[in-house]
Length: 393
Image 1 (cartoon, one colour):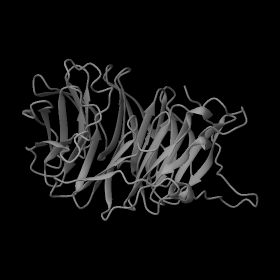
Image 2 (tube, rainbow, N blue to C red):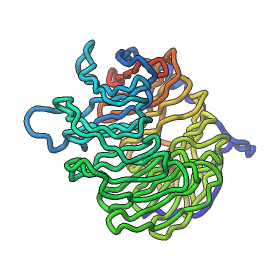
Image 3 (cartoon, rainbow, N blue to C red):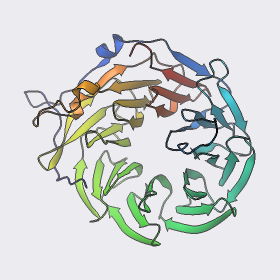
Image 4 (cartoon, rainbow, N blue to C red):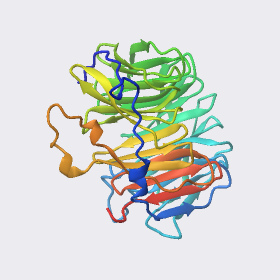
């Protein structure tokens, strides 16, 4: 379990002023050219999901779709992309929604999507046939998650979180209710603990299996845009320019991270370092590390010039997407792992690997396949940009 005391410090120079670390020069040394443009959507890309090995670990036969990307758009379609098919990456188009697609998830056999049309659609991933249409929300669906046992978890701007049984095509429970639209959610399928937050500035924690609310975590003063749950710890990022670290078991705030100069749009946890990474509309990426019972900002990265939209951390790789029409990849060399002294900074080991040239349209969403060192971004112009960073590693 993580325990943090409140310690608000930031990386600074010797004279006490904040120190910004510009790593663009390092990125320029390793520029690459393996970027593909994937065409197919006729509207802006609004949702993007990467199929992970965890989702397909128990597939039978020779079908292997780990590493696929699935996108949704204002053109009301969902598309499945296979990066291994160069020049013919589009594998399938799923039609059925009547308004913008906002959320996508999948498991070993199904794809599920949520839309502004208030519905959740479930497709067979192999045949691409529409299996179910789940209707019970009365506002935009903001989050979908495929769970074990043929269940789907969804959240909506109507303030509700619902559990569905795909086999019976029914909503089996309204898991929780918020007083405002749900914008972000995390669920631990191993413990049954769910965290959801949004426009009411409250992080709500439920024990789904016990059917009860555990906590209403209050402290933020504006919308909560992002949430991450790791074990007993919940991390939230808000429009009030702060991120907060909470204990699930105690229902208390352990730390307030208040060094950004704009809303915090994404938060991430680095399991190898037990550190936190925050991204904001100020364009800064901040790395936070546990230090003597407190937490401090040990690195500020300024390579992006607009809002940080996505952070995806793996063991050795870190993928970043930003609204300045670009994305970046960070690397922590394996030989350095375990080589830090007790007084050294593990989070400082993350170094910029590459930043490809910017695209022509604003990036709306980003998904990373860090095992294959791929980042895919969806643009306002309807194009996907697939960056394969495996060359010359």
